[in-house]
Amino acid sequence: MSRLENKIVFITGATSGIGKACAYAFAKEGSNLVISARRLDLINEIAKDITEKYGVKVYGFKLDVRNKQNVIDAIKSIPTEFKAVDILINNAGLALGLNKFYEDELENWDVMIDTNIKGLLYVTHAILPGMIERKSGHIINIGSIAGHEAYPKGSVYCATKFAVNAITQSLRMDTIDKGILVSTIDPGLVETNFSNIRFFGDKEKAKNVYKGLTPLTGEDVADAVVYCASRPPHVNVAQITLLAAQQASAMVVHREN
Ligand code: NDP
Ligand code: 8X3
Image 1 (cartoon, helix red, strand yellow):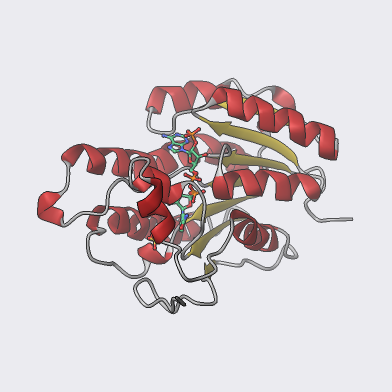
Image 2: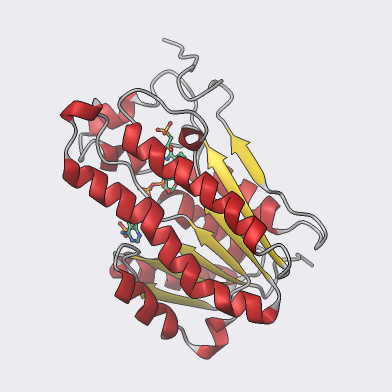
């Protein structure tokens, strides 16, 4: 029997990429899911498919993590049978643009900061009191290699992921006496919808990011998240950096022609 069986796993940004792969990976382990994102039609489709395939319980709802009141109200409205969240996966996030600092748009910065930092904070703040009361829980943040190494034209995206790293470390200290684990999974290049969003739908630019190498998939990252969440109770996998075999650091990548 999997340690994750019958656990309640709450995933933000579950309509695509890493979050969606996590939903399927945890359902396969027998976890019940609370899944959310802005696109409710997709959330409903995924919830139905997962229920049919794995027979687990899934509660899906619309959530924009940037909207503080939406986060508070939506999390309050989670049905009782899903309320005692065991594992929170803070995954919702994005990069907008890849521009020199002085050529970038302030609006892009707002969206990245509001989603990747403030959204993660709002959701965690809403879920944490229940975990503290139950003296049990695991918060798993999806950071990035960009939270360890800054790269050119990525100042604000990198800053948001450095922030995720800092929040993870502080929160681990603040909850160390509460029976709560806090971890971060920090991937390098993962081929999801991430680059399409970063380049505002320019598919050619997005494809070039992964040209000449075999990137990670959402499923590879989900595998690491499941590993992190399924250790014996005395173990905390505090941080995993997960890179494609052809990626040595944020900027050093071996591409074949
Ligand atoms: P995708 O674009 O494939 O997925 C992003 C998910 O986030 C979608 O489900 C989207 O759903 C959701 N999302 C975006 N904005 C919001 C919001 N305001 N409120 C709620 N949900 C939101 O990208 P990835 O799967 O690659 O990205 C997931 C996480 O992984 C991000 O935090 C990203 O920074 C991180 N990451 C990605 C890497 C990569 O190379 N791909 C590498 C390292 C880290 P919807 O649009 O329906 O709201
Ligand atoms: C996403 C990976 O290298 O584009 O966090 O920053 S990268």
